Image (cartoon, rainbow, N blue to C red; front, side, top):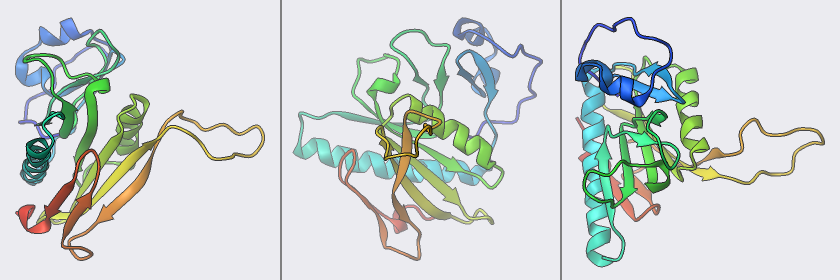
Length: 216
């Protein structure tokens, strides 16, 4: 997620949603709460925003095409929208770069249970530890699909796009060995501009996105 440059004030390590709301908007917009712990969002380059907008627009186009042929389903595609964990409370949330959720009443909070797809645009400054920590949050919340967009090192475009699907069961493990997490993502698709004409995937609806629509 990319935010304007704002000095970070000295804040406590733990906060509630109500305390977060009392902060200046430009400060609060740079923070996620992970079970109440303050997590600052890393700023990225302007190209990060461009890639995010291009992809979000294309996913929304595909969603509208789905609704036009199957009106009993209703999807909303958004960017930089808080996703709250649990059925109640707001002191545990993340803010994906883009997401797809089921249609809700106007003004309703987006909960993880409403969300079918979340995605992050990774900048060269993102560390593997940061990436895996947020991916684990999404998996633990039961969000079925996670998208990862990797930018080229020179920031001239998208280098790769990967789609992960949530696995909630586990294969046979050696005696005494248990997985670290109850839910994990499995890589279900990977595309680069050199390997295919575009992205083609069937979940949560038919997604056909040409690379030409993502160029910047």
